[in-house]
Image 1 (cartoon, rainbow, N blue to C red):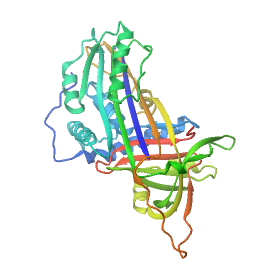
Image 2: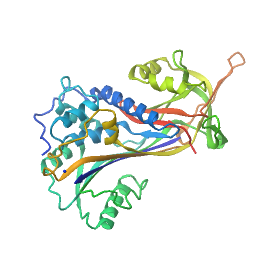
Image 3: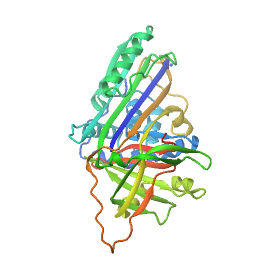
Image 4: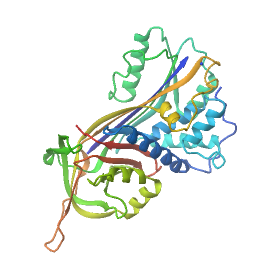
Amino acid sequence: MMLFTLSICLLWLCASSPQTAQAELDTSRDERQLAPNNADFALKLYKHLVASAPGENILISPISISMALAMLSLGIHGHTRTQILQGLGFNLTQIPEAEIHRGFQHLRGLLGEPSSNGELAMGNALFFNRSLDLGESFLTVSKRYYALEGLAADFQDWDLAGRQINEFVKNRTQGKISNLFLEPEDSAPLILVNYIFFKGLWAHGFDPARTQEENFYVNKTTTVKVSMMSMSSAIRYLRDPELPCQVVQLEYTGNGTVFFILPDQDEGALDTVLAALSRDTIGRWSTSLSRVQMKLSIPKVSISGVHDLWNIMVTLGLVGDQVDLSGMAQKDQLKKPKVLHKAVLQVDEQGAEPAPPTLSKKSDPEPITVQFNQPFMAMEFDHFTWSNTFLNFVVNPS
């Protein structure tokens, strides 16, 4: 299978020096210290999005969102700066602010290392109106920790500025998004674009010859036709004894792993599983999964999602409605931020090698059959950094 993950975070700071890192950061702690905090924030955000948009596909890139918001905090003064970092799950009495940014710096470097097992492009770009008096300190510190690229544009000529932004995003995402901006939605003197593009291969791919059109049951009244991929192999699996769901784990080449969670069809099963999602639950799944002979079917997927992150943070009580952005630009030049996150996901059959065949003897039990032919969840993690690269809820793959 080939997996594409593309995430774009957009920040409009509509017309109202980051504080420089106070000290050199302690390098004795590594980026893995960020993982538990990132996971807590990601699951809280994921639960909110699923609950607030019933019947809709949900896709987010948690690590991309965390990096974008942490970088944003560098340009914010006052209580909101602390609110953002605490909202991301960080206890500032246990991990200093400077160490958070250093950890993300290491994490970005590790995730962005070249690999023969796949492609990953991630970065940050700040497009700002030439008339905006942007703080150099914010640009300098953001470039240091988050590789921010600052690019001036003439926002009075939006056709030209829009083409510049579109061309930048197109180049950085290998053409996966070519028309990000068509019309200006707001008077926006500053736009922050955070992107992550991932293309990987399943460790063991699906045979395209076995892919066929099958039913996917969106709900009790809606059935759609989807291209269903299939394989028969020894696959890590768990029938959860505590929650009404089945869990399948697949690997892709390199450091990636994906948990596919299939709630039972019983009334309320999805809500029960969703409410129980936590680091402890995921940890229990990871240690309880075991290889079983299985006939597995998963649909090919091509979905996208757009979310207004700042409004969500306000709704969740993670930040207040007012914000002091004087660390980013002259006071009163920028007002309340608008933060949009866009992600695109495509899943198909390609793998580094075919799935190993199922070798059975007459005495072996029959392989179990697991069909992801109803709404399911998927979670991707990077083994080495423990980063949660995407969270996905598929209601309708078509």
